[in-house]
Length: 316
Image (cartoon, rainbow, N blue to C red):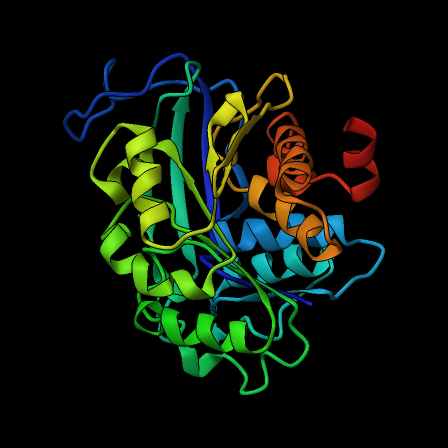
């Protein structure tokens, strides 16, 4: 069983415009109004829900092996989200419906050059706490992915206890420290978690914020000094850098035409996650992860068109 801890968000995507509108007065005007050639698109979002959905699709032959621990609101968007996840075979028994908070939303306006403005409402997932996890959550779990690190404000104080319990149960653990918003992760905060983390995942921006330097080698040395044995550095279209002790290798990405960059980073982590419990080394796992991510960003509906394992194998 894969257990995903992370944000669950409905994304509202506004695309098909040449440029983003400028702020103006309350009247429609030439600067503050743009016409879009594409309709508003509503899709699954949030690092947690995206990861669970992609993993659910990869595990289509054995449904209900992926469980999402997060929360939605008692509203239409929460019902929609639960339907998406169930359709992908995701177990939503640890996805409570909260009456005191709405389902999280991110509204994204993006122009033809992929510049974007985003508006995020955290809502229900931020209220998820350790008490929402069943007491026996470690029993059937073999793999734990903790993502949306700064966003799970109701869980953040319990990260160490959750990861320690996973390690004691022999569960493979992955921590994705992004996104670098709100109160981002720092090396000082992460260091106590290092004994319980098998794989640390980040991108270049998150790494620089976390380590206080834009120099990648120096930042990676800081993580190594904090005790993180394996770090996966996502490089976007350039692939992923795998650092494991003294071994360092860049695994290239798959060249595709991106339909959207909104969902670019998330699918790579579940792509890795699907391979690790099967005894595959990090480099081989990352190859499959990069292909998974590429197939998602090239798909018309993004994450909702996530590939099956057979499709990933064929592309690899």
